[in-house]
Length: 395
Image (cartoon, rainbow, N blue to C red):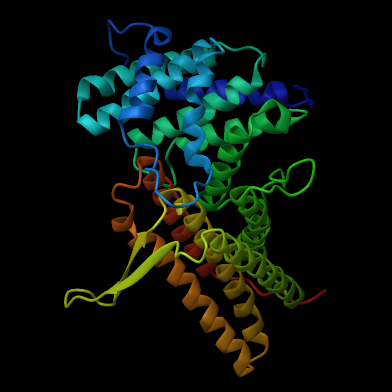
């Protein structure tokens, strides 16, 4: 199941060194029982009592998404892994602490987080990579509960470590469950968008037996293509972009846009023509411009919609980047109009993500966290698209 490709040792060293730096800043609390005795009962509270999972909508299709990865937490306990138990206890206690505004629970959560970090630091080799991949994702979610979701949030370190370990798996689709895989690919995509790294995500979203029949997995397959657009857009800000490169970026952006629109029409058809959401412009004398509010009809469709909108932000930002280069060398009116449209749509979907928080009330904490991440990612993409592009002559 696991194969060392020459860099596996380096990956676990990086994972351990990062954990050591994080752990050195943690003050653990005394007299807290071992995580293995707490994880089960606390997990039941997290899943069944509190609002992490979205409510079920009667009469609507129930879609799978990365948010429902939390439903697999109970199965993680079967592995009897001390690292997983400590990580899950840290996460659930952090969730309860935030819900109850309880400092003592937060301190207990930090204690279990410290336990998990200690155990990672003590690793000398990867014996159970699947366990570590899951641990990285759990700790990433823990960090979001304890730090503002910004570009420098420690969650990105855990996600990157988990993703690197996943790439070391010889057969990742067999080693990880579909829920693990869906979750990891989603948060790695968000990490790349937020960090602004000029690298494309390896195309690991595709199932080995061909395209997936699952609606969300098909969306991930399309989003994996947009990482190449973002990588090209980012590199052009410091490496330059010639006319041929701009034309290629524009063509790829148009192709990805058509893929996204086709996906959305198919997704909408699964609801028997029932609208997935309602939008309304709010006007106020104190507002410079109308603000859009979103009301969702099916809570389980929220992850699909916000990531679809984020994909459109990436597409239109890339189109605008390419068109700015083309307009400087070709002042045809049609190109200028296309540029204005691309910029307008990029801002429109970015604003939709940033202004639709009211529509998430009662839709589940997992959905709210995903919204915050997609909104931040959209803002970062827009900012990167505005960076000055160096225009180079065609070779």
